[in-house]
Length: 502
Image (tube, rainbow, N blue to C red):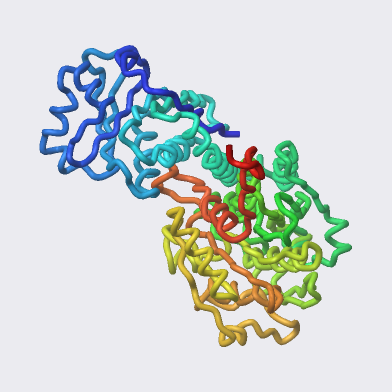
């Protein structure tokens, strides 16, 4: 699994800058004002930084961009990376600057001179996230990123401030690794095994196999995987950080989706290794919560399955019975994600008594048509819960857009031979899929459905990720937990409490 770049903090030792190997990074604002560390570097390099900020190119450089001065005279460093950024940038801008620095330094070690930067933990988070590379299956894996040392005042405080951020970053990288894995490696059994490994950091994990799923009545979920040699599983992950009713995170985990008998076109089918992106995000959130010891009760439930054509596969026209008891006519076996989620949503309500539910799935191509690769589609049955998630996503810089729902779409689900059908044509495809899922959510249950088909994996780099899996949603859901489901930190005890003043 991909490891985060090690990031540590130390008191500035300006006299040692001349001998720093690797790369040295320094922050300078748009006005070109040099802080104490930058002034020392400027002297060592005989005015190189002053000449840079006085040049017209400095004014034209974008905020958060990096200008690299290679093999600087007077220093042992390979390069000086000058980051153009204000002293107290917005959180998202600080992360983007850290990501730009990650691109500039590559796998090299770097010393950040941080005396003028008020958002160092956020810059470091961007450095950690954008430094990711999935190389597990390359013969030449390249070098793992060398450590980063950040020079600043109060390094202990900074180390404490970044610890929970790096915990979340570890969750993001876990999600990316899972989503990037090819399906011959990440089989349903291997996926479950990787989730079971979360026990090592304190997550309670239970794996339900096919006989147990059949006994529970999960006919919709089992129908999806019955054409595959890989066994269908449901994995329940619990982080018990409080005694409150849990937030349930539900994930679609289709490790490969051929479309089943309703076979997908060959072109682009290789991308369907990412059809377990919802389950991957749930797994990443659970890892993040455990690593940062969140004071919240959260349960992740993922349906892990492979959708394959074979002599035992579900056929178009078959009728299956869900755990809820509703019957579903399968019109299109490629509309399988909603069958997975239907049973897992009902299981969570029946067996976990959640306070609220969020499900995530790479569910519909229609979502990509509507929103591209910049925003996930957000559907919900309560405005307050939806707005809470949208605020969390905005705060973390993860694109999300609220989509409509309504009973007018329900007529499209009518089946002549069952309680409903699973596919309803092209119009409003992502909305009708959400409307289908709503039938498996109780009226009084706060629920958000996230269609992440466009954001779970990308063909081009994003601000904080190279091309491939993005880890979208781990940051936003961790923020949602902190904002709405986490107990406040206990107050430190005052050893003098109750004593008379001297």
